[in-house]
Image (tube, rainbow, N blue to C red; front, side, top):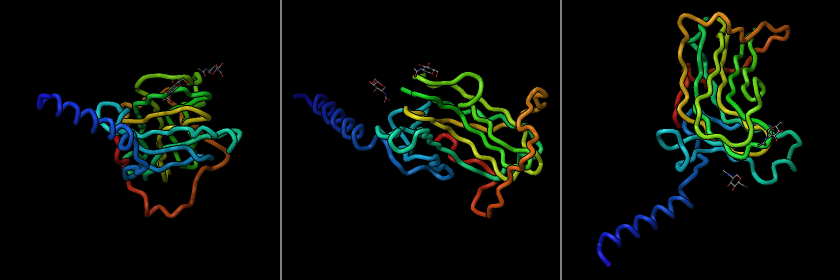
Length: 206
Ligand SMILES: *[C@@H]1O[C@H](CO)[C@@H](O)[C@H](O)[C@H]1NC(C)=O
Ligand SMILES: *[C@@H]1O[C@H](CO)[C@@H](O)[C@H](O)[C@H]1NC(C)=O
């Protein structure tokens, strides 16, 4: 056997080992955290990603419906939007999804008196089934009293969702047709101790 074939076989073998043992990790990069109402597999994936490895993923375990009748899993991060107060902000992320039984989408949560959720999983048309990497966009106004912004991806029920290459930018001039968040009668302010939060989003491409 030539040296090249040996090297190729070694490479193929190592690649295989990597695929089996090194493809995913449950160590999320700084900023990102799992959330939801059921035990989803949430971590980073080195085999499926947009442009650069890894991506973040949410995957339903096979017994998800026995744990909760309406389960959902979230991969999100929260920050103090110091630079964005009083501004209109556009969040873009790339998302790929597979075998989604119910719905999935981009999640954006503005914590302010007039705050609320902008959840593309509940908006427009329901996104389910499977889809390759595509850009998801959410535009919100960030009121001056906003204490925190939370953002990420949500998976309702079964399936796999991958999230990658998120970006925040100020929309200038603002799009006047954006009415989110709309005033609410129930204030949406959480009086947490905010010293653990950063004043900017991080690890946006995992
Ligand atoms: C999606 O479902 C198909 C058919 O059951 C299966 O072959 C495939 O592996 C699933 N994809 C993922 C990412 O789980
Ligand atoms: C997507 O959701 C619709 C409406 O709930 C449903 O009829 C359809 O079967 C779903 N498709 C897939 C691929 O799960």
